[in-house]
Length: 108
Image (cartoon, rainbow, N blue to C red; front, side, top):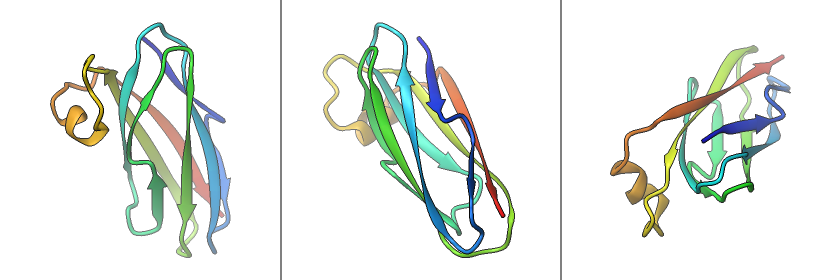
């Protein structure tokens, strides 16, 4: 079970901008994820909860609002997906995260 981010880090203007990162599942089982941010005042991420199919990818859209230049991070917690899960938000609440991926973001 392995989840990675592509690209593994990002740079965005402190005045605001958008980034796109792909979550890549190189494993053979479906994964469920939740995205957390070290700075919820300046960042918005879609989707916050979701699924990544085996050998598949899911795109994260990260929006940076205007704010001071600084280092932040986006952390994606993940776990094996329950077999009958259709609602990622509800299903993630029922599992224990088994790993995480950290995406460092530099606003300059």
